[in-house]
Image (cartoon, rainbow, N blue to C red; front, side, top):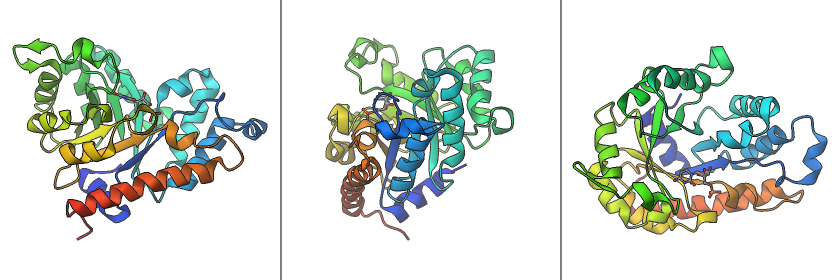
Length: 279
Ligand SMILES: O=c1ccn([C@@H]2O[C@H](COP(=O)(O)O)[C@@H](O)[C@H]2O)c(=O)[nH]1
């Protein structure tokens, strides 16, 4: 379990706010890994070994595991067990349902004794309201990461609609921040939204933001930092495909490390510009 302060300390020590996304697809991993009993885990293990000093979080996306049924779930559990304890473990599940169902989702991903998985954080959708979110908050110390303004093209369909409480994603942020403190709540804001981070920070000045969309989706790390960084950094920037599929040859882990290193070096520069360093 990683608290807000421990996360900030890790960011300062590693000079990185990189989250490596484990969107592991059997059709994209190197062919030789299919000789292993659990190719997905073998791939993840090597990616983790190659990147653990360069990042502060890992984010397996549940869809990539659930789509392989029982075997995929076992790969997810093995991956969870292997994740370094000094990194935030995020399950990108994007769940959302009525209270008693949310309670089951929370148990599935947070209750290690029951399921073998005790992730530090889960992504959820907010549209069923407060009672769909509070069951996750019942797990002391766990983070809830709520979709606010996504990187998707379709984010325009609903997230910018005007409501009595401002734009829909602003209303989401304001309401969710009444449910718990910034030591428990983060928001997802896509890197593809660049300058929008200035407005997001008016509504979420202190929350950590999980930012997908650099790399394969073309978002700008520079813009995210210019408009979204706080004195405590306040950002976790995710890259999945651009890192884990940098090569599909035998050198895939080295290639993943090289991509992660490029991002970490840019992040170190941004942290230095902002005067954020180990105390
Ligand atoms: O708005 C969102 C919310 C979540 N995602 C997820 O992040 C990663 C991005 O992967 P890349 O390969 O780096 O594009 C993926 O798991 C998405 O489901 C997002 O992209 N945008």
